[in-house]
Amino acid sequence: MPPRLQNTVALVTGASSGIGAAVAVGLAAEGAAVAVVARRRDRLEELAGKIRAEGGSAFVVAADITEREQAAAAVEHVVGELGRLDVLVNNAGTGLPGPVLDAPAGEWDRMVAVNVHGLLYVTRAALPHLLRAAQDSPRRVADLVNISSTAGRVARPGTAVYSMTKFGVNGFTEALRQEVMRQRLRVSVIEPGTVDTEFVTHSRDDIRASLDQQLAGMEMLRPEDIADTVSYVVTRDRRVSVNEVLVRASEQTW
Ligand code: NDP
Image (cartoon, rainbow, N blue to C red; front, side, top):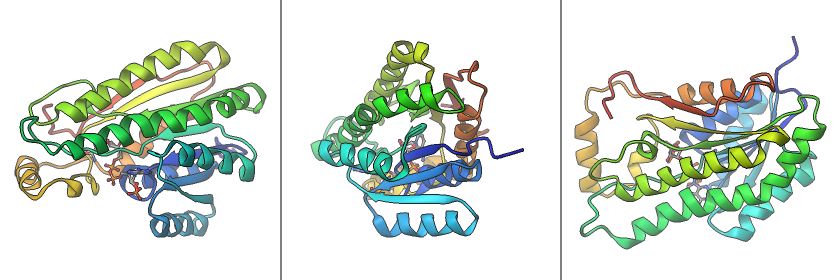
């Protein structure tokens, strides 16, 4: 059988590390030509080399998606070079936990900029191309997958602003899903639990120490576990729309 995403193009944001890198590898293994987007070009080139060495196709676009023009230019660059866009995975995100009281406002700005504005800018630029792919591709369906979080469903002390952004992602996803479903653009949200990535390394030292303590001894998810979920969602028959998937680590209560 040919790979299920043969002759399709996928764009993955935040592909320079963690979940996004694994998603890119997973979609390439399904046969998609994968455009990998993030700020760290060296990491993207390394990933693209790995995908190509495994027989896949990868295209690097370095961009800061919190800049509207860069986000739009990244999408247009991909479509210009690869000819189409069938799958968008809005994965880039930042989580900087800590109590609201005394939190550095710059941390809030970064979370809102990447998790909300970045996702919106990329989505806005990609939508016309995804809708076109849904009409004219052999699959006759296209996919937009947003990576949210358990923090998009459950609010807890210490994740107020992160939760605000991810609850927002969930709401946006569901509204958009209903707007475009008749054009066969499937819009889905995946809510990972705790995944072993660089994610926590961006936190302040004291916050990181308490996170490490909280997670000590727990077997976390691996990025590949979320990549599997993304691949599952986007390879269903066009009659099937997997709208929301919550994937916790087995030992995770929240
Ligand atoms: P990482 O920190 O490993 O990856 C984050 C990615 O986002 C990086 O590739 C980074 O690339 C990219 N990114 C950040 N800012 C920008 C920007 N301004 N423009 C373009 N790309 C940007 O974390 P994860 O892989 O864990 O996180 C991926 C997603 O999963 C996020 O949305 C996160 O909220 C979500 N998530 C993670 C969980 C976890 O436990 N790890 C749990 C639940 C959800 P670069 O720095 O090169 O720009």
